[in-house]
Amino acid sequence: MQTIDLVRVAVALVAGYLLGGIPFGIIVPRLIGGPDPRTIGSGRTGGANVSRAVGYRWAAVSGLLDVAKASAAVLLIVAIGGGDVPRIVAALAAIVGHSRSPFIAMHGGRGVAPATGGALIIAPLILVAIFPVFIITIALTRVSSIGSLSASLIGGIVMIVIAVATPLAPIYIVYGVGVPGLIWLFHLDNIGRLLRGQERQIGRSPGSAATSAGTGEDDGPADRATRSRP
Image (tube, rainbow, N blue to C red; front, side):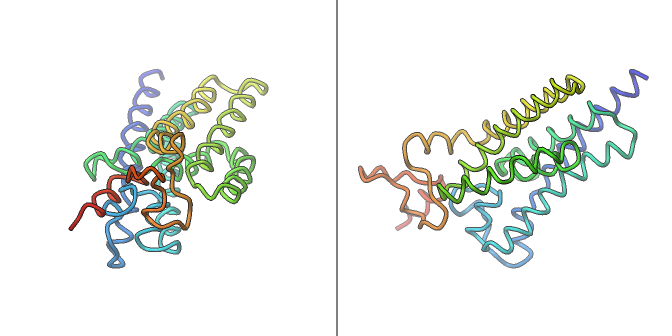
């Protein structure tokens, strides 16, 4: 039994990472003849940057597919009889795969969409709790990264409280720490810009996040490369 569990964990790790690594943020713009998001804005392939490349409608399609791939990874483990541990391993691996995709030279998004997809199967009530936080925070600040960071942190805290109070298996505490931990890790550059007051707000032009001191630093390397062209 223990060997079977280890095999399922290994399958979860590989399947979660590979499914999470499918770069829908590049595939969708390519299918409709749009620009590669890696050449725009932050250079990331997540929903916020895809919207800059091809608009909100196609970014929503890409984002839903990113959600679905993580859900699929967890459901695959459910289908082979995996318990709590391999399911959560698959969910966490999908976040890593999305953000460090093996198919696009370890580039990717920030991990929010696949985190949502994993939670949809593992802990859907958490999404009910944090969705208003995400929407209200973005509405007030017009900064998508603040919404993602706030919602993931609160979701993690809620998950840990539920895991301790219920009680659930200790792996759910790992899940409650791991998901926001990964999302914050993959938002480190955003956090740096937030601390410097240089993070771009939704709807602002590429150059508008630079400080009045004229540093020329805004959303990411793709913007700086575009400005440097003659």
